[in-house]
Length: 463
Image (cartoon, rainbow, N blue to C red; front, side, top):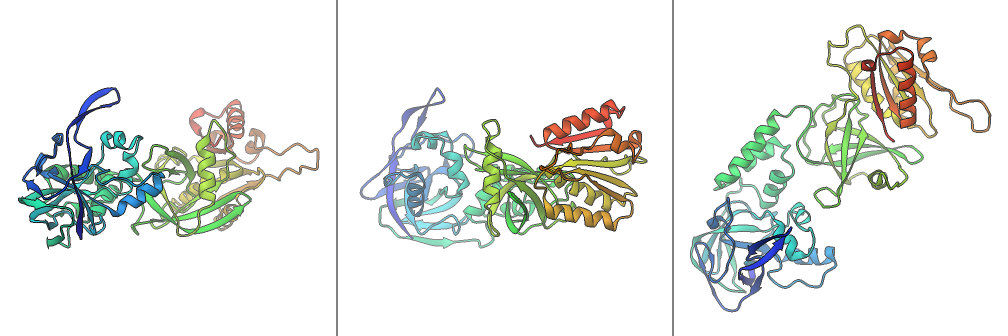
């Protein structure tokens, strides 16, 4: 562990979003020994932070090992020392090993790790583009140190660990959990045990913990999932089974809900799309989603990008997801007394229907109907699962219309009010309609024209 460069800077004026502000971000290497005072390096100018206190930002250290990562990722020329605004460019002190509260001897000064660096717009100005989200998400952020004993430092000085609490979180853990994985109540509690945790951080973490504990049916922010199984459902359609990448249990969701999948999480180019959950809602260890390839369209660019990415995922790879959501759900238990649930789907619309059937089974619903209209390459494995579930439940009924034969001139069979009315009382049913927009709109209009109340119709289309 060694200091590679000691860098100091002078205040200058910059313009961010049309507003003038002062910064001491630009640091350049200095020769010889530099005195370290309680509030920072001699001759180093910084704008005083508003909230955390200057003593907790006295010295900023950044691992030189990250330079190669950013140079390669950004296709830049080798960066000069001090590129990231650090006072000390160091080696051998990565965020995965450095812990909050660690005490080190740098040269003749004794410094304590106080907090991570949370980047702001000044870093964007330095790098020339919106770099801060990418920098923070990497957790290669460096750390601020408070001065416990004044001294001096110079390039080439050794760094010596003096004290460490092995139960204090690493810098990587602290940034990951406090900024991204704050759904993790256990992890947040661990952060609160950080050695010499600053009061401002304690308040923020306690607030996130309280919000997480009070959350029901999901989580806040994004969560990393790992693909543990991949099932080919047909041409350009796949089911992915997901586990929490941190090995923790998952919240129970509602049958019919969707999982929000995010591509480019924590970057300026983020895309989101919703995929139906097809696993049992009460399975707290695995979520399963069904993905079909979408042709890239200008009006829905995210669909093409996300589907292409997900279809290429293999077992062991990861994706980022938001909590389950969506209104294609059954009424609260007890509120549906006497109403017959009727599920109407076309094509991949069977995906959310499977979640609804799982929930109806768990509720011990006495009766339910599902009508399905094929649409080319339906998810075969999901349909087999639906058929098995219906066969095992005497009160469940499945009506599959015949697939259209492209070689005949016969009109395509469709789900309509006449077909539904021949098998059940329309007035006593609640309808859940999922499929392409044209199918959803025409089926809804057909049922309204037959006298079904709009309150009895729940719809979800996928364009």
